Image (cartoon, rainbow, N blue to C red):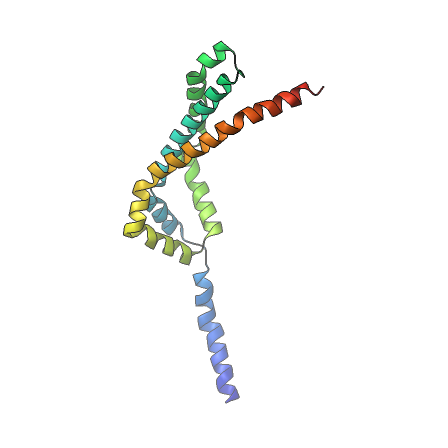
Length: 166
């Protein structure tokens, strides 16, 4: 009987344990790419840029309202926003982001988790989420910008107090 139990234990160690570890293995690059495609990550980047641009412009206008800018600076808000966005778009290209995303997903998620997420994005709910993500993202960004703008007078006051502490 002891020999039988040892044989079962040895069989488990040799056959089942590697399978269990394989479930925790890092995801393949192909599966990560499939997930990124299903998530429509390229569109997500564009939505992020749009949100970033509107948020930056809104914050600059809020600063102008509070007198933190002169008239010349206020007139240049669209130009400065466009320049800032050009810098972001130059530095945050798809070619530069893709290997970063793949590396982060590989370090953070297992193959089993990637497979589950892929299954979600292939489902009707996942497809609806992807389709509605730009709208959700804009609404969240607008709400965050509103809260940031509400905090702006306090931030300007804090900076003014700090500047006056000589």
